[in-house]
Length: 541
Image (cartoon, rainbow, N blue to C red; front, side, top):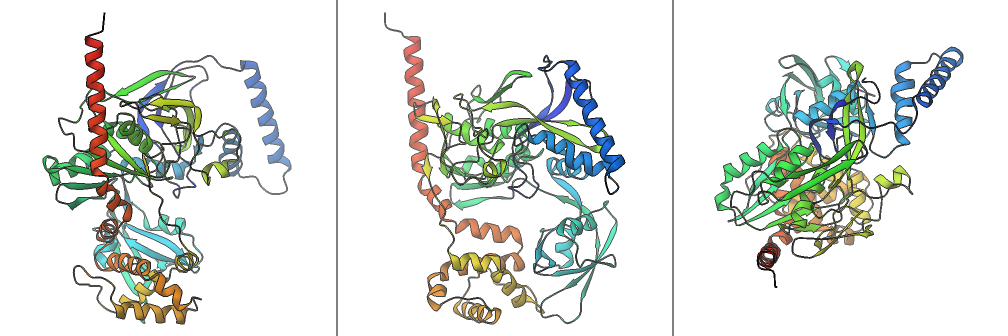
């Protein structure tokens, strides 16, 4: 580690709480840079005294504790995280395992067999194999139960341990024994590990002629390139309106978030800026610009849209380039610089705050709340009444509480019956039993028919799920949507299942209806800017 007071080289990230997205990075990450030199707030003697105190405490614990002390556990899992928790919710330490996982997330690839697994009733089951991955090509299905991996009993192993066994160098072999519903004997799959891409843009297609849908799941090293490739594949010259979906997007690399925002704005427009105690203000402006494409944009957000996703949404909103639809975003406006340390570990330290083009701070206040409440807050309407700014057209926007949408769209809350079915994995298990022992095929355009609904009704009764006939009837449409997604995942793959769900999503339909409002917003901003330019060029005497 570099000495204190000297210039540090690190990679900067905007990271959001891992608790929200299963140990994924949330936020925006920008290219390797340096933190400017800054005078220490504490004296060198204070630091030396503190280090000596810690060393003495650790030595005392190591010599006298009732059991053997593992340094990794005491330091990696104890002392360092404990210190960082006194700073802010986002500074964190990566041990070798999570540091490698972070790098895999950034690169957008890893080596393994390519399937998502989860815990179900004390067993580990396949949630879905990734289309094109070794697991998918071998015929592994959602619902298959993992019994053994390379003759190692999988009983009692958690999903992380299972995933670690399935990963490995490209070209190496792994044998997996599976139990499938309605199949008497276990199935043996001999898989060759390969490179598993993790694209950040999984869905991109025409909702209807001229209206394009683009979903960005996170921002890794390939995101801006993936966006470009999808526009080229569909033909950007044919786009009359864009539904840009960053719901549940936790962020990632800041440079990639900036690059995506760049392509929608005019050259020279400010995208974001950041500044901190140890670094001067740094603005990011659009260098490429929209290249003349000015189709209206509706940007979908929710409470789990964070950091780099908020940078993108905030830039579109502040410049009136797009209409933001959905729920208040997470409100993560802290920049983490990741410093590689020894032993393949890393320190993600908050070094700056970022601001939207209008100058508002997106970071929510965390000084008077617990980290738990900060991560899992119920109040998504927070804003700082003292942080009031204007968009290009003169609309009022606030900082201090994430990006507030231009138009609210709250997804319907789940009722008790729906929550019960989800917790018991009812539609997932029914689907596995339905396809178990037979070929997993469906006709194109398949929809759950009355026989399927009757069979599922009987399945619920046999499974001991408590419900009334009124519950089943009132939730019929919701059940059909869940069954359709699970059936499509098994028969066509997760990509087709996701596409079908998007096409049926109410907020996506609302976004298409709001495209004219996005156009009006954009036209108004252009008009106001022209008026300002004329006024500046022709001031009244």
